[in-house]
Length: 173
Image (cartoon, rainbow, N blue to C red; front, side, top):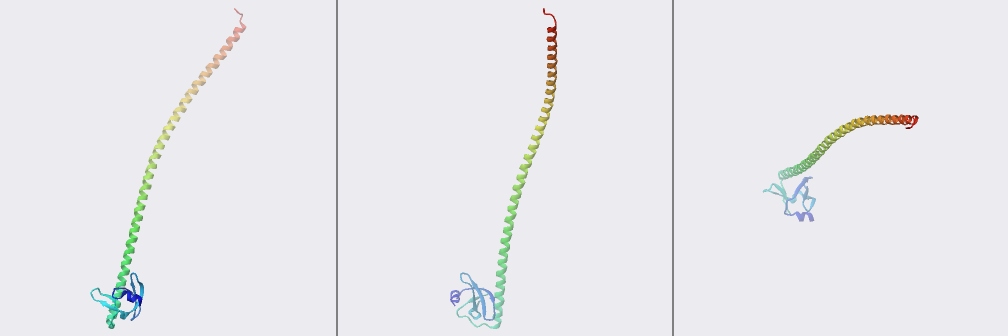
């Protein structure tokens, strides 16, 4: 009865009509509670059942109409909650899509940067290989010149020894 006194004269949300004399209700700051059907009066301006201490005995047709109205209100409440949940889901999916797009853009940018770096490395590698080949050819030329010089030096050393031997054999002057 404490809940009934708290909501007296106020509108409540009807969750379910359990029988012709029991109504499951809900009100903010109160929660769920059950009241007798005769504790309600129909608010003609809003088309809703309102809890009233003075209640009245409704006819069978009014009870059915009240039951129909409460069911429609409940379905409307559920539909609104469903729409809110769907909008939240859409917003979350949109946020995830935006994050995925940003991540894809970041990955694409990184890929482009890596591709540019790879192209530069390929060019640098080609330049180093060409320089290496040029130096290899130059080393070959220098090696040939060295071998020729070495051969000339050996020939000169050999010729010098022959001259020393000839001088040693010939009479002194």
